[in-house]
Image 1: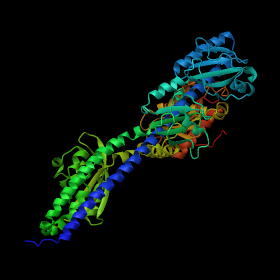
Image 2 (image 1 turned 90 degrees about the horizontal axis):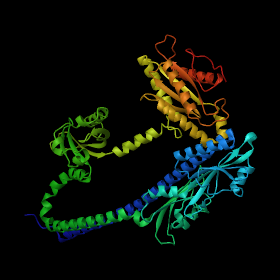
Image 3 (image 1 turned 180 degrees about the horizontal axis):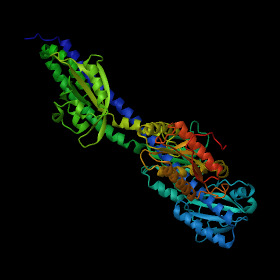
Image 4 (image 1 turned 120 degrees about the horizontal axis):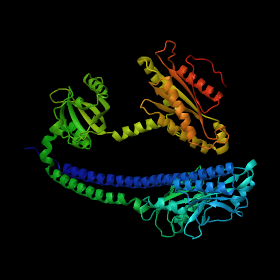
Length: 627
């Protein structure tokens, strides 16, 4: 019989158990505090993101209003303001409102400030604007830029009206009046009402002077606190968050705000702090109860273990021998733990495999691990296993794809380590976890790095990569490769007349048509630089490519984007140069520089010959003839 252990040893074991229980409770308290901070950080982040979305929606609304008054002003400035033309203008304005429910009304005022035509059945909210500061600004300045007025209550007093106006010019650019688009705050309130910010949350819009643009702040508890955004608020910037307690109801709130750059609008989204922490409190209570029960169970088992401690001293040697294996498996209990023989056959697999792959341990035990790995990833995994077998390394980490039982492909990461066997045979222990979300994020970020931020087409970097790849493929396969170089006609004049925002919108519209023209997976539509775009068409001969270019010219012209100084069409157009690399021809020059240079020359020929047309480049490279 083993001799009894000293009493002090039992007391030390008891103290050790109590220390473990205290450490568990302390760790859980720290973890819950971290979760509390994370919940607040998430609420602030979501409030900022929602404020950004609401600001973007408001700016889109003002952009629609600006475009509407611009089109009406262009229509009347071109045709005049006699009775017949005003009738056609009214029909045009009603058509614009039907296509844009965001606008409440459109009204045209003459040079004296009295209204000429309006979409409101009983006349506009304001019949005479001669005394308005905005009207005087349009009258006294020859700029055609849109103006944004301060919000005012409507006649019924139940909503706020915001206006976007533009100068109307007659012959010789003489002041002929003002075109006004009105936006009702009830539209914003209806949109905001569909967004769930909790019973005590609120969404509010302001202009950059701090005036309310929506009707909600008449009763909103965040109205007075949000005014601080428009004074000296250190570090506020254009986007951010803060916490406040309004005097109206004393409820602590988290607010996110976002200030617009294109239009004078700021969105503020506030949510109740208690509502933001509700899920955390509920989870913390359940986790706290579970931790307490677990700690009590540990304490009970520890006390019992202490009582049996002296009788188990003789098993120390066995426990020490198994300690390494036990710790490896115990520390990875939440991940999949496997043991493999030298040929990759599984000799042990933990129950976590069912959560990870949907398969049971019994279905995979005894099967080779390499069989389930994606064929593209298998060579790298086999090479890592070979390095372990050859003793070149003791640990390897590999990432690979495999299918779950439900057919969904997932990414897994496995850490492999050589393990000692009592028999001396070679074996490897692997710890596996799911990294699908991380891989998908990496792929999304990689895709974003290859897209142009304005047009959503491929950027120059992606285009250069695709061009090199397709030129090499054309050499190998002997198939033709065509390139269309596309440039917006007189685009600088367009920007001078309409502003860079309108220029961006014009490029976006052209880019949409280009993306439609790139129908096949191998086709690449890209922004080459500035207003110059490119369309790469593999396996397409010159005739087919030129037909696509001619059709694209007609589609852009059909957009009817006003461009008065692009004569004779007075709408936005494009010029296109086409070149084809055909390896089947004896005089072919299968080089990317030749294809780019020839298409560029053809583009300049198209501009020199009158613009708004598609010209095919020469078969042989020549110097640029047109400046």
